Length: 446
Image (cartoon, rainbow, N blue to C red):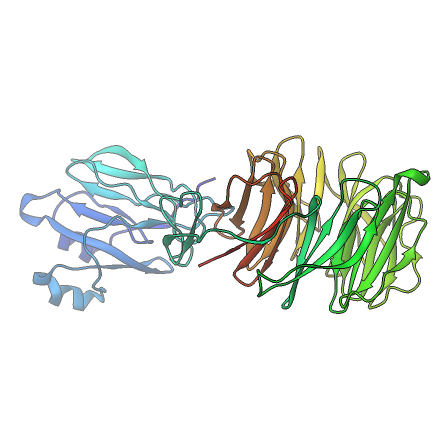
């Protein structure tokens, strides 16, 4: 919804300055105008600022004395002004332009990017509608038009990305990935029985070989890395469908099984010193750093499909396709209703998820509220990650993408990937796993 702009009538002094034409209504957020009502009194001016509803008017050189008396501020004299700010990446109303001909459209919102409203023009007193305003600039950082694939917007300009760097190849179906200041970690889910592994690679040395923190793992999945240990789950299909929770120090000295009675692994999430993990369609918790001992968190919940935890909030997906949360008080409430969420990520006070049915990335307040689409037309999106105000993900058509959570502009970081799986970010380095290709990649942002 486009927000209307505040307006006021011109003062008597301003009307006298402009001549005997009909009174104008003036918007207060930088609208460009031309006053043609009297051939002898044609004056050009631009509104350049607005404090509350007190507009300031630019002046032409021969009227400096008058403007000085009126307290005007000198500014630009020709460009169309920006519209107001809008919520949810929607631009504000377009600039108002009075001209003998068709005036230029106003700009879009000046805070959140989006399509601005149409600029109104005055054609000899007859009102016509100008074109829609363009998207506004978020702190001057929005690129218009949007950047091409393999470009990112940096300080208002589109900049090309360097070619992705191959970190490791020949991996057995790599999936989840994590990164810290020293290393990259990922899960090799394997292609047969007991050939999965948890891998580590020096972050700053692409040419160095990868090492295994744990080998001979059966269908490992759901990786969480702390300062000292890696945690993951496995699923043994040959023993009646049992799952287990494991840990290994980042030095890779040994592997320890923490819980061998999980049933089907259904997710992991860390919140401070608490590690939450799916245990036979329910949720269990253990205490870091070693995760010794466990305690049932939610008994008899049934059909937990994924878990996310942060800031004292615990959120999960049910088999029915709804998102629920457990607050610190223990109260369980429903956040959203699918229809088919497949992954979760908590960022601040919002929960993000991938929707398998609609091929979209969605979000909603953790406290409950309106569900919003972050990005649509995504083919099987997954592998969510967040860093520095950007949400990252992959699509099965072979692309790695991100979107600004403040400006709403999406960018493509990599193409032609053979089934990318998950993303991790450290500083300007974006890492991802290529599941079918068996590769680990990195691209560095400008």
